[in-house]
Image 1 (cartoon, rainbow, N blue to C red):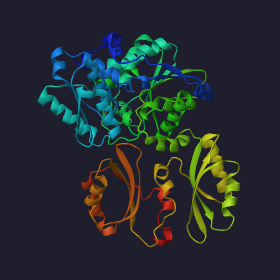
Image 2: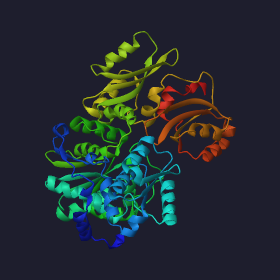
Image 3: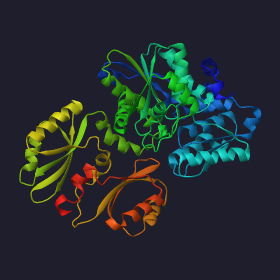
Image 4: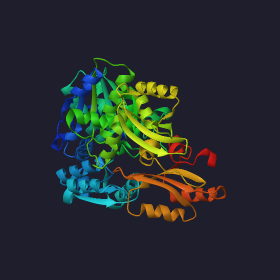
Length: 518
């Protein structure tokens, strides 16, 4: 059955008859008492972390497999994924007793590759191919034609969509009185399946799609009137890092979803902490999107006394990612601000500055001598009143003569510069600074250096691994003006995502040469 022939009524029938409970569980709907009390609304969380593979993806993969003929089952299935769909497909194949091939990018972290092999056992063959999902997916489709496999897509398929829609069936039974439901959107399978069910049985419920601001493919599709590929996607919330949503998922979401909202990485980190505080479960970044949106939306619209629901759609988090989450969650909840300040290079200046800050707790303090007359400091402070409280503090500091720059929303400052405060070139350099995304695989750094060659001296380098498929690297080069075109050509050959950040205020404040030296 082609997607264009699937009516809403047929989707309803598919969802009601889906045999997903052969492998899935009816997950709990947990009341979030702490967040409810803080926001003044009743907040409920659908716990898809309770599935055997810690994600809702099991539902759609199994439902798709169950729709296949005996001949198709004997030939085997294939899928491409670096995350939860791969695990769901592997588990489904094992439970159904069929063979599955799963193509994953070579950059996929070992923890995910090992999980797929563990869930699938002897029924699954893992193939590592390419450095991106697109390359892995194209390879999987090629293997389909060669071996006669049936391709099981991660989202853009009626049976997959119907499988994910079983979440809504449970949700409506568990709490039929929700006012607003927030659903994370990557490819759109979960949102489409839930929306097509709920809008037929309870059309009054408001459904809000939630996207990472670094991968808002649904919002772009709505603006263009059709699925449209993003130029790039962020790597933190990898479970929703989709460049283009499906045609069928867009058809349903565009018609049935009431509103769409984006959330930042810091807001996602804050939501991971919110979920942990209430449930003691550690959500993956994509799994926390709905809670991030609940906090943001409730404050934006001054909601009180409403019943709000979200989906914890996955809990497959790389443990090392928690360093980043812990570092950023207070910023996401607007309980911390970070900023740069110039203070006089005199005795007692630090004490005087702290007295100006007052009773606020200082969470971070990085100091660097700049010259004979001033020092530059990177400061973090705890907040009780959010950014309004910081705005008042900033105004007060400026009234007292301090040159103060808010860096709370400056990604370069939070990711790199806060760990590097204190270094400036001692001599005049033609320093240009770039932010690169490196694939996390052996040899990536050497490939980077070999491609650039030895023409340009590296003047600055900072890298931190956060457990993602790509690492973020900040690099400075001494590039004479006459060789900039040659440098650009070398960077193009490298093929990594890159952005020049030489004019970023965090870099200018702490790491660049003083203007009088240039």
